[in-house]
Length: 242
Image (cartoon, rainbow, N blue to C red):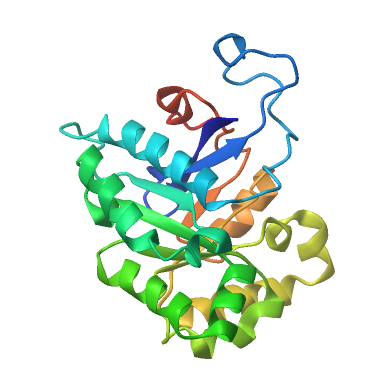
């Protein structure tokens, strides 16, 4: 397993906003120290078993990289890290996150924890402890992002008071040309509805100039995708917009 970093950008200022840390399988029979930072990564599967241990490893590696920007003009960049259901239901998640931040000397407000729509739904259905853990993470200063949001998830918006959410990241399929050609109004309404709640919108899956134009036109705050930057094991190289 290796950790790659994909940049995301503020579409209002056209400046680098931060990175998403991604866990990926190495190509078979390729030693870690011989793997090219960029070659052969497109299309590799996300690790299928998102365990608390995998997420903790990625968090540790990502914060170590982010700490390298402390004292520079990039000290305010964000790091986005996955928070799987396996980790949410793990009773020590709040202590794990706080300990990692402390060890690496990174401010809590520089960490963006990505919670998938499915994880959020399970947490809300379960109620009680998982929701309290998410609320505790938010209260400790970390930001919470709901990932892979679609028009089918608008029913979640009224429930977000239970778990304060800072950002909504759209499912990559929502901005793709095929999807929007079929229903341009639907996507525009989705972005507007989310923004009316005061939540910034991340347009994920920007792969063409048309995708980028659409994200700008709709006023999406942040953008991420292969057009803007491919995942790279070298965070310095990942910081350069294509």
